[in-house]
Image (tube, rainbow, N blue to C red; front, side):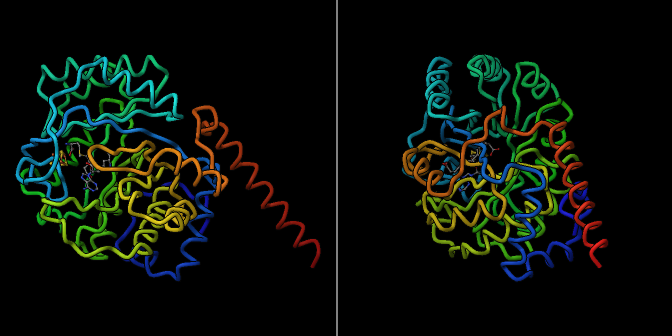
Length: 350
Ligand code: SAM
Ligand code: DTB
Ligand code: SF4
């Protein structure tokens, strides 16, 4: 396989299953080759999350502590005031985040909420941060308004395979999700979409989730791969753990299938060993959530992440170090020239 081949949207399940079935070392080697052909292998994009509206959600996602259908220890909170959000964004910037992601426990935003979140986007962006929001389903008009306010990314996850989806959520359909993703893309925002592993799905479901994500054209710029955080009170609280090595395989396959996307080692890091996280970076993950809280559950403390980065020789990706498309094509052209020169040298020596 050529590490620099153009991104594909037509991966078959057979091809994806064959990647999953590779010997672990071969899979990680291939993923690392693809990763190095497209990214600085030691740069990790750093985002910070904030829940801007917490709990009492009408949807019944079985993994989610914020669903109003389940009784969890969660403290519900109304839409935060703009100043509070900006304060948190400032702190995130100071701590080294380049993107600020705001999440709301809504099925979809109401128009009066939209006025407030538009202003949040403007003010957070004015701090020099990239902005991301995840507000549930959005229609054309709402997406256009968010894009006009300057929202860079919209996060909306497919969560799992089309087949397993009905076991996890009944209050909205897979096609609703695909429609929101198309609407976001159409409005000109960058797409962040991924899923959750460890929800009791089978290996085929993990392949089919990645197939659906890679069918999106262009691929989502950001692909969060979450390990389920099992929250007491949710229907999935006692589901069997997924083998961490299967999780790493999924990251490696995502990296190979969506070579130009940032693959985020997303929820679940608090419960993960440093070695598993290191393997995830080796498999091609190059984005994390940074800060001691995700939306409602905990994430590693910032100083632990700083220590992990130091141990692994990783550094936060800045907008300046995030390769521009022009720089990327220049580097790839140079790589091809080097490869050709090496081939000629071998020919000449025989
Ligand atoms: N309500 C909006 C929606 O669902 O589109 C946005 C917020 S929702 C909490 C964002 C994403 O968080 C979900 O799509 C899901 O992938 C992830 N998530 C929620 N609970 C999780 C959990 N317990 N473990 C891992 N990921 C989770
Ligand atoms: C994503 O894929 N994971 C983030 C973000 N997108 C919004 C959310 C993770 C939530 C984990 C459970 C919680 O903290 O409530
Ligand atoms: Fe609501 Fe989003 Fe949680 Fe589903 S994942 S229950 S839509 S907050």
